[in-house]
Image (tube, rainbow, N blue to C red; front, side, top):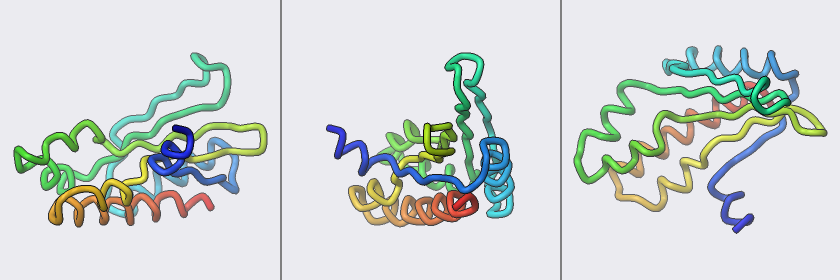
Length: 127
């Protein structure tokens, strides 16, 4: 099970502190034409530095759910990035959209592949 989860979720160690990692992800998201539609700070609830950013692009979202047979993908929306402090640094985690792209039909797969490329660009802003 743990190996499967490593495939489904991708993670990377940020070279920045917690606050700067969050800020860089937000800036890169907007630079790429996406929007941060939610930010959840769990520091008080969890007792460690932990936040989740929800990002979306209206055009991508509309294409993803426009066909009834693809509406199941709405359960994976919006895209989420968690930023969390671990003993050895700050990490960013997100869904491996490229993995899902390879498992679905051509049209939706192409869209998810593009989302995967955008996700990589967002995460690369803190590497």
